Image (tube, rainbow, N blue to C red):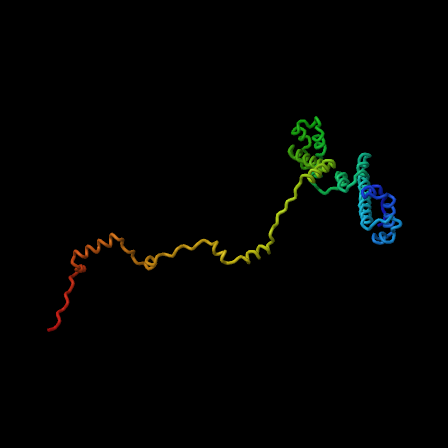
Length: 275
């Protein structure tokens, strides 16, 4: 574990409840290339009998602190090269004790990709956004003030375009405020809820459908229509009603059982048998 930047071992000793001298000795042994098991077994006289877990915790904390210190140096150089490093900003960077706090401070100065806010700045709308943010009297009448930033050559065709671009810049300004991001993160950590629902895969759905018995599918289908009556299917006339059938039988009895004469001639009598 090669040392690249100096760190305060007091933070490590205080967080782990160990003597600073012991922490310093362990770090020197680690920097010399010794492993945690080796130090635990063969350097007890130097570490004061620290066990493997304690030495591993020291190693983990020191690595994190050194990475944080290296990142601070990189951020300070980047902001300084832009000519925007102030005494207050430098002190805030050095006081940051987590990577998230450090990155929040660096966010306004971090090189950005093309965004709506960067496009609006390239069109000269940042002064309008600053006036709105600071409640400048010059921007008391926004529509009137926005007309002063209309520039067809920069694709700001009307006051609405100017106000829209200023809004993009203001949104980015608020999103880059470190104290606001910290408060929002704290609120989410205390009140946020993570909800997840299981979703069946396509293979599981197919397997479930294949395992379903055919009877269940048949039962779920609507019943077929009833078949037509046999008489209607054969084309035969329907049977007469009970009243009609009785009237026909009565008429046959009154006529003496004679057969009606067919149209166009009489019924021939049977021939006499030969004598």
